[in-house]
Length: 114
Length: 110
Image 1 (cartoon, chains in turn purple, yellow):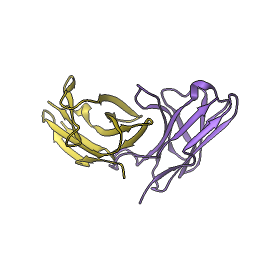
Image 2 (cartoon, helix red, strand yellow):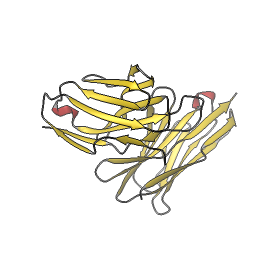
Image 3 (cartoon, chains in turn red, yellow):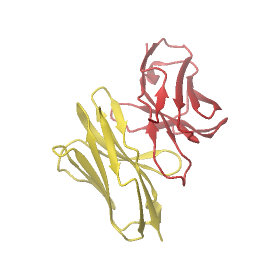
């Protein structure tokens, strides 16, 4: 069964800490995404990557960075966590445009910054 | 096991056709159902549905939810090539958890 795995389901971090959220997919997908989901809002794209070492900013990249050293792994980094980054973080992967198929999402990481 | 199933997986139509996309779900603690359109960059929010039988409409797109039969449909009338995209259905359950379907890939041919 193909899947996207996020390393942590729940995280609690202190303000100012550097936080790493890890995501691994086993479908050999080219594209990987990081979103955050907040109450009353739809998905908001933070960063995405369409190839190893390639990345593009999404709609809300401020305060975040990403790393994709291997095709199957896409990491989201909060350089200095702040309380307004408390949210549900979702990782997803998809094949290249034109290959058909849709997204596969991870189960999410609920991050609380205190 | 919570799940969201979309059908069809892919669809090819001609401009001007009307299409209906389906989303069925089996989840506990249902809160809302959302539809997104995915083109190049990221999903664009279309609709959020929480009540049965109330149609949400935006231009040529409309959607309705049936909480008894546990499904939603997304209709697109008078399709245009710009409607070509992947349409994602997501169900939100208690605790702000989301379950996504795998999407329907729509291609509109001129």
